[in-house]
Length: 334
Image (spheres, one colour):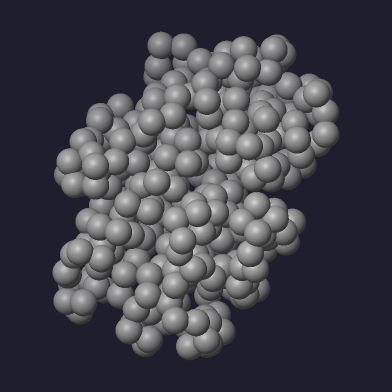
């Protein structure tokens, strides 16, 4: 059985569905801070089976221990935590407390119960460096002043240090690009809150006439002055996680990181794709304050392909088409 933390979130819910489709048994833990029970209902509707769910905060180690004691868990996919780079500047204590405490509690519970197989969902931003050619051999920039990025750097250090103390650990750290898309049939996707934190959900609101325009930073050191990011379809991420879980079963005493990325676009280029797919003008206004962020975040690594035989398959066009289909289905409009 596989435990998925944050299993009702955007990435976590798609991971759960993918695991179920491959015949795996799954148990979900989530504190519903960035999710709701509607997602669980969707998952059970699509899969046609009951899915064990425990509402707990992963930081609550005694409660998490009980989950490990109740279910025969042999692997964990850790997808819980706060993930907004910009929000973390405003809420540093929340990000450090939530993200770092989560992984420490999880590792303690796993260590206590003898579960040693872990896939941790990290971020390409973890390098803290502006580049279109990131790769796993590149050292982190520990001086980059962002709480989310620092928390992910600390998490990877905690995992690596833990693995050094016990030869039974088998860990894959997936440094994931910006995740977009939805399940192809439009019945599972990213549930968009009234105030989204990511550019694609914001653009969907504009396309649906639920928002007038998007505030856009035009200060980046790039050709069109908007940041460049690598984007990857959520189902490509799920495939990377599934492959990693199978790969870990054949390993012994391993802790490897992999860049999981797809096509690279500037934000202006991305919005042009959204406009094309939705057949709507995506209006933008200049953000009222400059926010210094990484101008470029993309990888050119082939490690995931060489070791895991994984490579992103889906285009940015498909990512937007799938997310827009789910968005329209959710709000019941044409």
